[in-house]
Image (cartoon, rainbow, N blue to C red; front, top):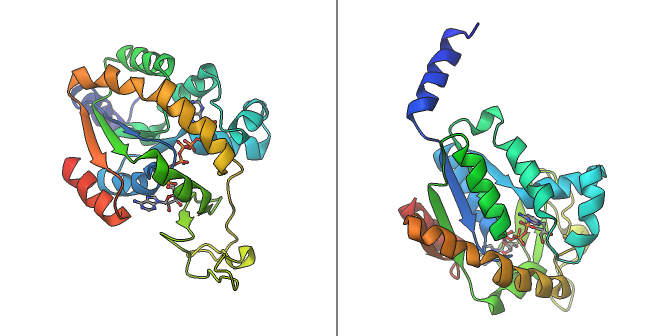
Length: 242
Ligand code: AP5
């Protein structure tokens, strides 16, 4: 038997559509930087397929073993794997009022699978925030990124250095000094954050991911955000368009 609170929530779920937002952009556009702010504002979770796959690699699950080599080389993991991950995740209790998709969908096949999945529940994507940054800016962003593995907090040697950062005589950061501001734990660099892997990531982005925009534009739900400005300014623009 449903208790009173659950019955009310189920009743409202029928009347209030979930907020289903895609945050779209090339590698290094700032999706991971901006999404937590959207989460704070709208109180819906950020679902990053990249973070989920990295967790699977760290745990060496079957999915993780299949994804590891592809990710390191900057290549896409199969549609079947990522669609399966998302299909399960969006049914979790914390998604009952909506969710933000970060890094998904990334191909037209994933887009169609997502639309079909949502349509089967009478739902659809209702917002796409497209972060745009020219390719030539992205290498510096990607190669200077350090992350705190547990929380996913992202730093940058030039644009968002951790408080602990020390540099050597040539101005390069000393790896041992790279610590998370909140926990003091060591930061790390992602194995795919190399100039070489970025070539593949950008190639796939333009060939496989950009066409998704033509799919959603006719729905009138796409908003463009200039992500080639300081992170605070990106947030101001994003916030004004939410
Ligand atoms: P994923 O983890 O999704 O990586 P990505 O899309 O390449 O995006 P990034 O995390 O690199 O960039 P971001 O936009 O979040 O940038 P951030 O905010 O950190 O995917 C990784 C891999 O997983 C894929 O290559 C693929 O193999 C696999 N995968 C994942 N999803 C998949 C799918 N759906 N299908 C198939 N395969 C999939 O910012 C970057 C840096 O710049 C940071 O250091 C930050 O501090 C800095 N920065 C941010 N904003 C600014 C700013 N405005 N100015 C200056 N610096 C800034």
